Every structure is written in C-alpha cells, then in structure tokens.
Amino acid sequence: MIHRLIGLVLIAIAVIVGLSYYLSPDDLKDCPRPGSGQCQKAGAIIVISGGDTEARTAEAVKLYQAGWAPTIILSGAAADKSGPSNAAAMRKQAEAAGVSAAALVMDERSETTKQNAQEVANIIAQRGIKRVILVTSGYHMRRALAEFSAQLPNVELRAHPAAQDKHWSAWWWLTPWGWWLAVGELLRIGLFALGVSR
Image (cartoon, rainbow, N blue to C red; front, side, top):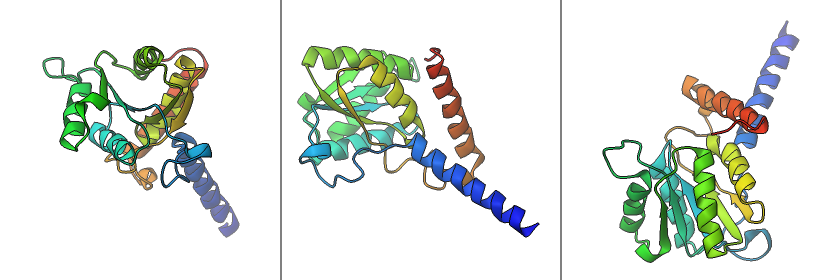
C-alpha cells in the first residue's frame, strides 16, 4: 500500500513539474543581460494583453530597460469596448515607467492570441525585424509561441514569461484556478495542432 502511495505521489510530482516546464518555456532564463549567442539583443519585445496584463507589461518594460530591444510592441484590443484598448493601457503603464513614447508600437485590434500573432506579424514585416522576444503569462506562453511561430516563420522567436503574475506562480497546482488555466491551455494547444485556433 505504501509503495503504491509513494508511486502515485511521484507520478503527481512528475506531472506538475512537466506541465510547468512545458507550458512556461523561458529562452532568457540563462541570460542575465543581452550579449552574444543565445543572449543576443532582439529587434522588438512583443507583449500580449490578457490575464495579468500589468505583470506582462512590467516584464516587457524590464527587458526594454535592460537593453534587450529598442522597441516594445503592445498587442491587445479593449476588453471593455466602451473604454481604451488594452494596448493603450499598456502604453500608459510603460510610459509611466519611463519608456519613451517613440519606442512603443500599438496593435489595438487583436482580441485573440491568433489575432495578436497576425496583427503583430504585419508590424514585424513592415519594420524588417528578424529577432523578437515574446512576453506573456507562463501558462499562456506555449500556445502563444505556437501561434506566433505560425505567423512569423522567418523570425527568431524567443519566449520570456512574466516573472510575477497574479494568476500563475510556481504554486499554481495548489489552486483549482491554476489547474483550470493549465488544462484549458493544453486543450487549446491541442486545437491549434488540429488547425482549429483562435
């Protein structure tokens, strides 16, 4: 009985750790600052609204201020159609943190991850950018990478999830909401693989 219980605990730990690593890849985790090789600077930092938009924006600003890229692309339509777009709110937050208005580019039309990728791909093409850093929440990163990779096949795409997120942390598996997010993303990734994404 005790051996079976230990086996179940080990399986549960493996599932939790595996899901955490799978959903939240971070290509900059071994890069304390921009430099050479894997740590080269990018042409732009892309930040997608949704979930904890403020945390995502703060992470993009942190990368910008550390010299990772000269431009931040803010992507997201208005959650409340009577108010400003998410991109506009993100712009306000970035400017308040000291980012120059000239360094900020907005996509205010995207309402889904797929639309984020499509609209940002147009901006990237117009500017001839060849390397970008994608910022979103940890649970959303794997699906966002899939959507953006499909729209930006000739652009080097690096993932960097927000370090602080009110919806997602290292302890996500202790809450029903954490499991809801994880399982929901896995289902959406499956739909993407089947050619049904949004």
